[in-house]
Length: 336
Image (cartoon, rainbow, N blue to C red; front, side, top):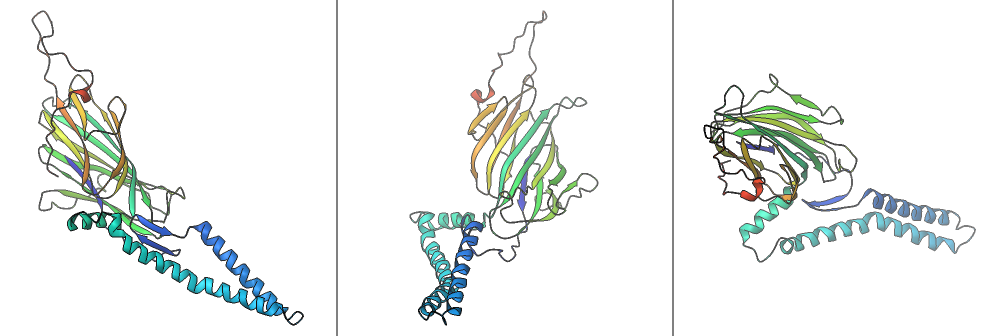
């Protein structure tokens, strides 16, 4: 199975604050700095106006007041414009060096594409697997995957988002999306599509059946404001194979992934691919890094043969390793 999910709609509205954004390189006047600037500038302007109004009593106050008024006007108009223009030109000039000017043009273009389009980051992705033998069909293996993630709008403008996912059945008998949902307390954003609300689209040219969630509006800096959007999906596959690789592809930028697997050690050997950043416990791994589009994580499972025994019950099978991670074999990757 290959579980894929990605954004299909992002239509930003007008920015709420002055900002300059080039993807992840985001130069923005923060709320605190903005408030301080306007408070100081308007204060200077008010002081200048007061001095001019009282200049009929003290003539020396008039030129001081006029100077303060001119300075405030320049700060509001020319100074802010020049600073923004300077930062824009600086970023345009420095961007080729930031992404590696010695790299081939194709590599630079790919990195530039990742930087400029990574505006809605996925965080705290959790992949929760359950691998078991169906009680009514011992020749098959059932794999359930529950995937959840948080959306983080790192820009200063609203972004629209619509979850879309499918399963690619390459070597398994069947694969399906069982349920999709969004858990949020923001503006009627929560939804859950179980059957029969879950209506697949397709199949496409590759035979995939697609499922689409509700279109959402993600406010700017939602994670900083504790406005959470948890997107989730549950997948299920049935396989006759004795071993397989369960891939999960990231079609958009993702920061931090945890993997958990529930299985019977007497029936399966399971290990993660690629090597995780840390082992959190039994069948629990974490990837503390940034995943760019088209990267993936996977788990490899191998079904163990039943033990061979003598007539007196003595076990003739080879000793089972206690740590599957230390007995890695070269995984067979399924096509996405």
